[in-house]
Length: 488
Image 1: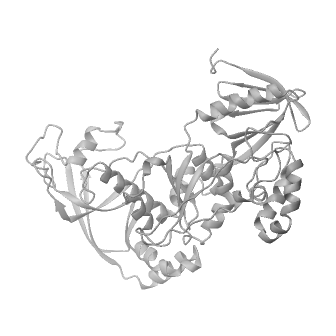
Image 2: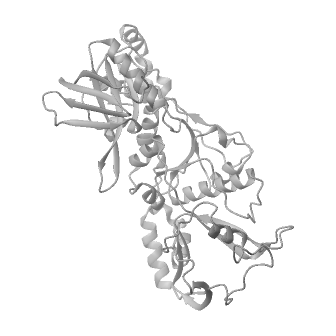
Image 3: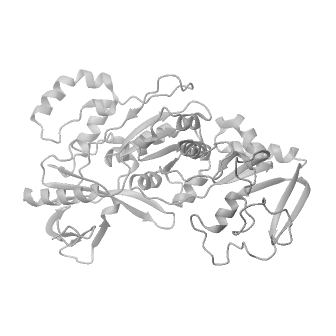
């Protein structure tokens, strides 16, 4: 019988109560034998890790080990007694302190200098008796060990960590765990092997390159990473190469550099605000264009990168994280990254129409303007643009700097000169609500990319503005504006 139709059904003890546990078609269910209505179902796609242990709740020892590792002097004075106790302990004994002595490198501002990276090994796990939520204090106090230190150690407790949606209204996810106990080691090993095999079949990132901006928002990105992201990545057995940036546009320079092999990673992640995310996807798209042999300054089209991007919100507004996850909750973002959950994100481009380049041997294609920047949330000229520019001087104020700069600029605002050109679709041929789906390589996108007036036009240039046959009317508005915004 194949695994898809195989059913595992056994009795386990959870929190000193008998439960009936079964697993079939990627769904894990446990229900109390005395009260069949108390049922919990977890899909394998939401399971982070499965570990074995001899004890249901080693939280006390885990907290003690973390305190020893965080206090080197105390750890050194008690090293002899710790080594003696480790000899007599089971596989749930103290961890090697090297697990918590990872050095976090700071990448210098020069790309020519030596670049170091930090790999976070994830081989530890947690054992708890009941299905409790992993709180902030649990993740932090217990030193991110999550238990015994060996996923395949012999034990009669099967510890399952899984993600669950705890608040649908705010889209918040949390990690919980359940400890299943069975007196027969054969049954526990069978469940462990089956669940771990199915976990390996999941399409999840196992090697990430993470950029951390320590200056964004309230300047607490590193503390947030250490408290929330690092223990969860360890729990899910995800290797993370961490780079802490020290200047603006450093992420862009690193990603576009040929010295880094992006193909070695399952994803790129940034820990910071919207500006950090903008640096990352601008660099990734530019790198993709360079790898495809396209002109980066005057590209014929914007290619879609093959490597996904994740964002851990640690900025002032975190609008991109909110658009992707429905919340700016940091744990929720980390869980989505670990589970490999994807969602599309549209990006918009800004071009310089005064700097154009005519493609060679392509008379039917209009000149290509120079690509200036890509953005995923909002582009602003005028009032909001001045606020963003002026507030950089007051980063020490945190998010309140926007209120301060906004008040100043509003009092001094006398308007901004500008000219806006809008093409109005008179015939409704380009109505986005006309029921026609815009898919990859569709005729609409083809005409927009190559500047063709119609699908049967092969030469002769693009249509003129306001042409009678084009179905478009051009309207020019000139004057003073408070601000001009482009929202994606």
